Length: 321
Length: 263
Image (cartoon, rainbow over the protein chains, first blue to last red):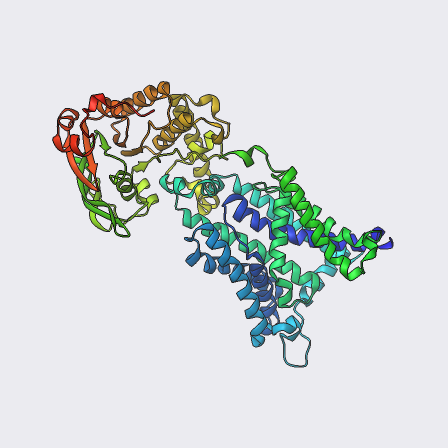
């Protein structure tokens, strides 16, 4: 049980939970407030990460210029997806978003010249040279570590990611309680009724989709910086569904339910590696890794039965029509 | 009186069925006009065309001198023509007050750019809006429910909420789709009083689909009768009641005053 006590391991779990918080906040904005079923969130994460990495490696841009451009590219990706599809009924839209996310991943896998293909970012540069995009970020992280007096790079990342996550959560909370957020909720409730009150539902859905995509882009940046290497495999649809689980765990329509869901999810997800006792010990450790997916699934099932509103959601909102 | 709304030879087909087949009539400014007819006469389809939910295949719809049959719903609403729905569309998981606050045209706080660039104007608009919403809640008697979820209201209360929400927009023309359906007798009287008072005091024009003929005869000064997508008669209540085409097509052989009001 030595890993259980290791601070380094839990720092890592915390970093990932912070990244997932930012990713899932996008889903909360899109679905919890605007009613958009976006099952392609991971694609925007990929667009953000790849845009940043490509600009840094291939164009020699500063990280601090490439990063906001990565976020902007993710938002533009949201607009590109939304313009032709947001007039579709919500279930058709959901299907299109899954397809979109797979298209993005397959493009990244096959456009070797642009993305490094299935070898990932290591092949971004000239042949035979291992490319890396996070030199400037690593420097910044070192300086932060020294300045804050933290013991490890992961601990520093933990602080940076959660500061960013909290700033984004606070901004989302502030903007969603304005009249703008009220219009979003009305569209979630009944698009036709909102239109009859003079609201351009399409424009609001497009904004929600683009802003949620931008959040995924931010998550993509931190993901890229944390792992200092990524490939198209990192952006499989499973990640989108992790974000959905986090939102459902935490509760719909509540901004600060997202970090709660992400932390609970992160602990369940990481915690299953400590299931070294019977009956779990009957399985090999690589098989046990899949148990966590089953456990998360069971938790979601139990939640639907016992607490459909999630940990922080409001029960009465689940029964109103 | 001048025509506020002109329906000119409107046609709308679904597949091979001409739901609205050349309907034409005017709604005079400041009037209460009722649109009646048997089920399937095309009344609701015509309503949807006027409100912008459906686009007519042919014909023109002119509101306040401006052609609106190619505009989307939200632009028509902003022009001052607002509808209610047959089943009141209360936004269930929002409070009653929020339902009303939603009904505002040109609120700077409803735009991200407005929130950033004109925060003071947004706050001022919101304050004025809240005041107005409270007044309208008082008017329809829902003030005690201001902070309740709209989903907790009864069917009749939702109709009142719907009406109050429409009034928030200060419309010139209101389309009411079966306002009396599913409303208790006590609330019916109240609703009728509200509609009459609104026309009298604010000069709001109403076009109303309604099956409750008692209500229609009491409230409307003009009745338009549709059957099979066409207007078969129009005029004041007395003349429509005596119209043979109406008696044949819509009322069968029974006279209007003998028709039982729907439950």
